[in-house]
Structures are given as C-alpha cells and as structure tokens.
Length: 379
Image 1 (tube, rainbow, N blue to C red):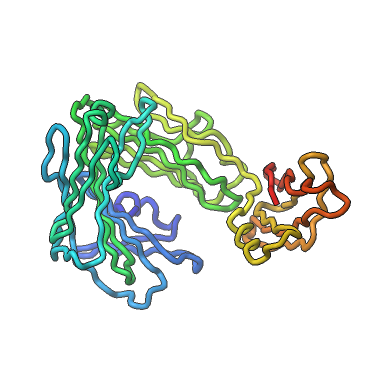
Image 2 (tube, one colour):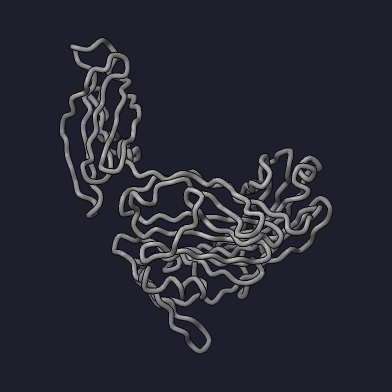
C-alpha cells in the first residue's frame, strides 16, 4: 500500500524508502529478480483508492501517465443506484477499459461481511447495466427481496480499470459507498476470512483483519488470544476511515513460532472477536506441478508427486485398502531456499503382484522438521 504513513513505517525493513519533492513524492522499492509484477495501492480520503499494476521488466521505465479519474454516486433512490467515473482526459469508448461493481453485505452470519461482484446476467436479486461513453456509468436495480435481506447493511464497491499494456499494465480506480436503505450508527461487520494457503518456512506471511461499517472501531490481529509484538521480523500496520478499519501483521520469515489460531479483535471496550484461520507449518503438495509434470507423461504406468517443505522433507505412501508400501522410482531432491527444498518422486502404477486397481487409490504422509501432511492420491 503506497500511503505516506505506511511507507514511512515500512522503510528499511521491506527495502523501501520515499523522498519528498516539491509537488510529489518519489517512492523507491527494492525487490528480488524473481518478481515480475508489482502492485502499488494509493489510498486517499473519502474511501477512494488507486492501484497500479507495474511490469518491472518493461523497457520504457520513464513513461508518465497523466489521466486522473474520480468516481461518485450519480443517483440513488429506494430501489436503485447509479454510479459513474469521470476522467481527465476523458474516456474513449474505443479504448480498453471496463467498469465493475460489487457489494459488501451480511448474507448469513451477523457481523460477517461478504464481498460479491455483481454480474450483468439476469438474476432474481439485482439488474446491472453499464454504459461506455466519455463517462463510465453503472446502474444497479435491486429487487424488493434483495433490499429486505440487506436493508440495514449494504455497501457498493465501484471499480474502473484502464488497460495500458505498458510499464503500467493497468490502473484500477475504486471507491466504496454506504447505500443501505436503513442505517444504524456505528454498525459494522468483519470481512469474511479467505482460506489461507499454508506457508513454508522462510516465506513472507501477511494476516489481514478488516472491518467495514459506519465508523468501525480500531481492530488488530491476535494469535491464540494474545496481542502480537512488532519486532525486527514482524511488521504491524493499521488504518481507519469513516467506513474502514484495517490492520495487518506481516511476518518477514515464517517459522514454527508463528503457528496458532488467528483472530480479528476490536481494540475497544466491547472487544469483539472474529475468527480468521489457523496457521501450521508443514510440507505442501504442489498439485499444480503434479498436473503439469503429469501432462507430459500421460501413462498408465504411474504419476509424478511433487512436494515442498523444510529440512528433512520425506514422504511415504501405501495402498489405501491393504497398506502395501509403495516403492518410489526416480527420486529427485532440489534446494529452493536456505529454508526449503523440493522433493519429486515417481509413483509406479499397478503391477502384477497387486490386485487389479488396488494401486489407483493410495494414502501418503509427507514429513519435515516442522510437521506432517497426510493426503490421498488417485492415480
């Protein structure tokens, strides 16, 4: 997030620094050669943000983009709302840009806010239309059924994305507006937690805590019911607006010490607690690489299994029905970082010594110094 407060606190620890100019601020960001794209998010007052997706390997590194866009509510009544983006220079309908709208609402659980993009296809809840002219305009008509369901907590999120296909690949302008038919002061909810991809040792891990509403209280991330301290390897940042209260914790290098149950907690007298997820360090099955490697080795003779984990990574498998141990072929081990390694094994298919199809369903356990991961395979 490119924000003067956050960048200032973030400097040196994340390889970033800023320099104030007369009418602008120069941000410098260091990253590894493996990084291909970089996203910068500029947050301004009034619940507006602008994100820039940058191709760090692009040749023309000094190109300047001068278009500025601003969004607002054009019209709102009891059943519909119209929003727009106006830009300078004006938009051209022949250019590559698109508008999308989404809602934040409490669908089922009280105090749990869900995010959902609004699709143009007909449905019983909303009717969405867009107009592409010199101004990007979107209109949402809500059914009585939808308004009754979300009448006290309904926020509209409006996006405009300009595809540039250059150093800056695309820019997205965004603003959020409370369009609830009935408003209760100080009402808020926690954003639903996204299922977390288990980290490997040494990886950077960020846990987000977000609350949306009307003047939501400060929030913070806790582990196992206890506050997290800001240290040389742990970065904590928070920000608030009239609609948002956000806090996040970043561990620069994941280790056994970060394991635990994480919650989002209001930092006030009420101390409301919202569960996020648990983090556990253990070996990871690279299903994407399994499928990729298998695509070039389509055969009834067996299948590749790719695992990543910490020191001592190993795996054992057996048939699911009779616990016959599977003997691997073509074992290969590769160092990934100073903390992790990759293990590739070839699992042979059924042979004459087994009953037909008994090898198609096997159970495996991967282990390393941090933990174990048990999973099933169908060959």
